[in-house]
Figure 1 (cartoon, rainbow over the protein chains, first blue to last red):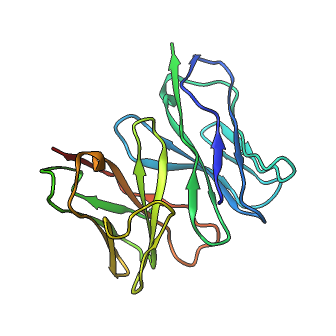
Figure 2 (figure 1 turned 90 degrees about the vertical axis):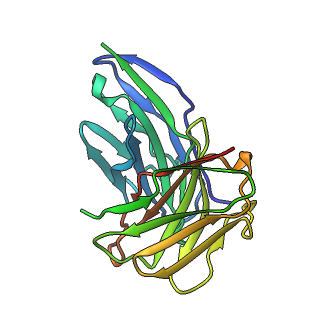
Figure 3 (figure 1 turned 60 degrees about the vertical axis):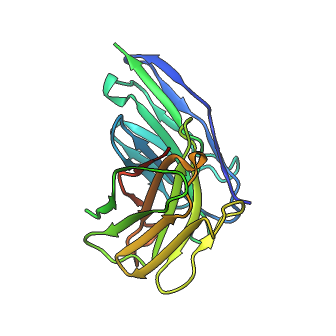
Length: 111
Length: 117
């Protein structure tokens, strides 16, 4: 069935380092793609999204580009901050309107 | 913005009892809601898709008689864990999306921590 595979964590970075969290999807066609973030002690919230090939979603300095040719939606940030420490989930919405998520990647940013 | 309220936020129950978790969309209507289970290593697994006025659609491997879902109105879906056992202890999260919006993202409840003793 449809699934999302994302880079396993945990990831630990120093402040101002570059971040990339890989994500690939399997749904056929053109699913909508999302990144969600779960800050410590909080619920999941949408970080960014993209709905068609070559779209770039961006928010809070994070970016992800919908790559149809590689079925990927990697999350990137040029300079992470301590406040970015959280768990990040890559997700897809299939043609059947179901949402599937990756396993989550825990990010810890140290000062 | 769209808010999904989930209740209770945590519950402890004895083995063999049933527990009901409510999920409400507070300021929008949701004909479809989704129930997830979050495992210890953060893995977020889709359990079922709850459809207002009809039967829920369960993912492969999820016992429909164990996890009863009722979506009686456009703003309320409930998940009942029947005859709970310690292995059912987990974090359950519901979500919904605003109908009619193209590529609308999910809005999540804050989750329910279930502990079965």
